[in-house]
Amino acid sequence: MIAHRGAGGVERENTLQAFVASGNRTYYGQECDVHVTSDGKLLVYHDDNTGRLCNADFIMEQTPFEKLRALKIKETDSEEFSDTLKMPAFEEYLTVASRYEKVAVVELKNRMSAEKIAEAIETCKKYYSLDKIIFISFFFENLVDVRRLLPNQAVQFLIGEWQDDLPARLSEHGFGLDIGYWSLTEERVEALHAKGVLVNCWTCNEKKDAERLVRWGVDFITTDILE
Image (cartoon, rainbow, N blue to C red; front, side, top):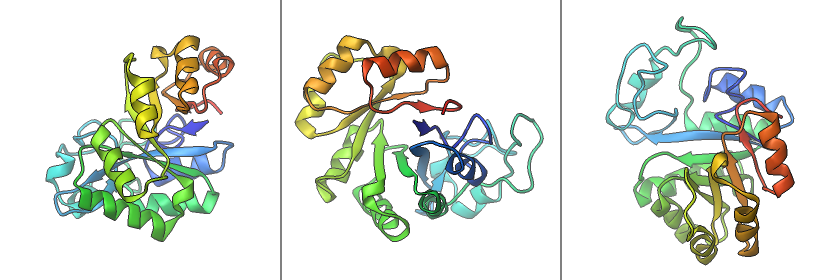
């Protein structure tokens, strides 16, 4: 079980509080989302814009690190803004994952330069261990760049809807899959496993759906609330 954006069903998503909450639970791993700020820093937040959760609306990639860090984030289950919740720096997230020995599932949010991917890798080496990291991305090229630097690194291609060429395409590159759980069937899981492709799925929050996925033999389930 992978805690989506930390324990996002318990604490405010993608905050240190959420990552500590998932660290204190039985999750195998905890997922985060990483952006590159306008001044080249790695910062953890989900959306491309800050307006959904913050007290001002900026574009992540067009705003400097310190301006984003100064934003206030809404309290859990509240419209009130917190004086303590902040966007974590990537190394802060990794420090929490390391402390609780959770697999760090790192989503590279947008298309990143090869240099920034290399920087993210070096940050992982410095603050944790690459054998405890899974890189995921909706951008196939990000994962190709990861593998160019780390031929054996665990990576998973993120996608919402099923495509019939996924088993062969992912097998060719040695990638895993992280797909919207509603797109899976037992036959599709079998087809992926037949090609040696590990299967993760997002974001499953209903016990009955998770039990069905387990019966089908998926390898990971990403969730906001289930343990």
